[in-house]
Structure formats: structure tokens, C-alpha cells
Image 1 (cartoon, rainbow, N blue to C red):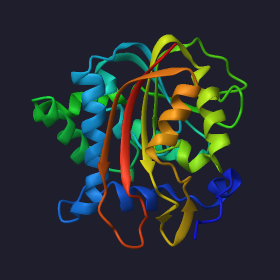
Image 2 (image 1 turned 30 degrees about the vertical axis):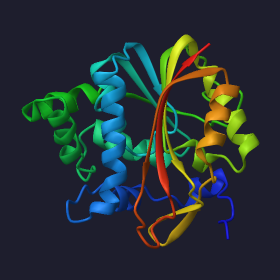
Image 3 (image 1 turned 30 degrees about the horizontal axis):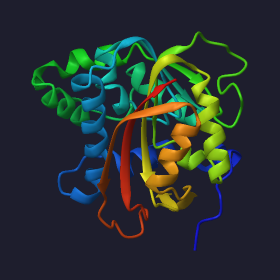
Image 4 (image 1 turned 180 degrees about the horizontal axis):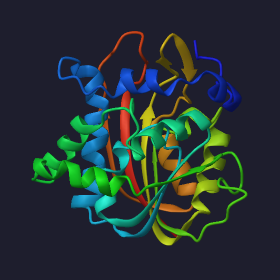
Amino acid sequence: MEAAFTEKDSYARHFVPKDYLETYYSFDPAKEDERALIVFCLKALHKAFHSGGLKGDTLIDIGSGPTIYQYLSACESFREVIATDYTDQNREEMQRWLRKEPGAFDWSPLVKYVCGLEGDRGKWAQKEEKVRRTVNLKCDVTQPNPLAPLSLPPADCLLSVLCLEGACKDLPTFRSALKNISSLLKPGGHLVLLTILEETFYMVGQRQFSCLYLDQKSLEAAVKEAGFDIERLEVAGLNDVGTLHDAKEMCALVARKH
């Protein structure tokens, strides 16, 4: 049975960033199945920004959550990275790391991993400093202008990782959200989208959060309907991790706006 949809106000009240980070981003080699999802994300982002050559002046990340790993490859390719999220506590958790505050989450194992993909694990401290130039704003993907009341110049690249499937209650809302965020991207710009497939829930601490059940066909159709041509797409299976989540696959795609 599908989980009841988690409304955005429930995220604002009940989502605990520390629990989320400790559950999904500890990068513990002993937890191979849990680690597989983040390794897929890091490699896919490396392929898009380092190997794939996406670059420009401005990248906007939609639904950043409390995480910074999604910028570890992109920070080398874009002059300005703008993080966005709906909940205050996620933006505050990210700010703790950006400002080097005591108690901030330790991202260094993931930073070193990405530096290894790039061929130089020793430059991890310099990469962290690049990422710390990130700007952090509020967004709501269900609104026509997700960054309202702000109005930014169209970006060269949109990034969204593990966001829309949590924010959207059904497929029409998902399609609408893709069109909303596409308004932030200049024609010819690229969308880098990493999405969970065939998942209905995930756990943060003892609380369950819903996830929109998406299959690859529905995802591709929604991206095309939002005005994009898909240039690259990769899907990988995920192992069963018991009661943590029920995701079956992970998808990474790069698409170009008409």
C-alpha cells in the first residue's frame, strides 16, 4: 500500500536534517547497500559535469535539502552555484557546513571520493572551499516561479537530486513542477535530474515520508513534455534495504531545453 502523501508543511514540521544525513550519507563502507545510492549519484554527477563537459556561469539546484555532495563536481564547472530548498531547517543545516560551524555534518569522505574520481584525492580541502561559495535560497517547486518573490536571470544549468518525487503528490503535479523549474533555465541550457524510481516511501528517523511512484517511461515523458530533449539517461537497480525505503531503481538524466 502506498504511503499517504507528505504535505510540505509536514516536511517543515517533522523533517530532521541530522537524522536524514546520518541515515543516508554516512558513507560507511560496511553499509554497502545504503552506500550504493550515493555512489551512483556521485558518479552520475561526475559524468555530467566533469566527463560530460557541462559548464557555464550559473547553476541552480532545486530542492537541495541539507546536502552539499551534489556540488562536488559542479563547482568546478560553474562560477556561481545557487542552492534552494523549501524548509528552513534544511537551509540552516547546509549553512552550518558552509560557515564551518561546530557540529556541522562531515562531508569530507564524499569530497575525497569525488576528488578520487577526478584523479587527485589530495585536493579535497580546496574543493570544499569552492563549494562554500554556494548561495542558499528558499524555493517551492509547486509555484509557477519556484523562487518567488525573487526573480533571477535564467540559469545555464538546473540540477535537481532526489527532490521532485518527494515534493509532488501525483504525476500531474510532477509534470507541472518540471515546467515550473524549467522557467528558471535559459533556452539551450541543461537539466541534470537524479530521481528515484518505483519508490513509495523512505524513512528519516522513526518518521515515514512519501515518495511519488515513478517508472522510467513516465519520467521520460514528463521531461519531454516540459520542453526538454533527453541527451543521456542511465538507470541502475538498487538492493533491498529492508524498512529504510522501498526504491527499486535510480535514474540519472541530462536533458537540453528547447
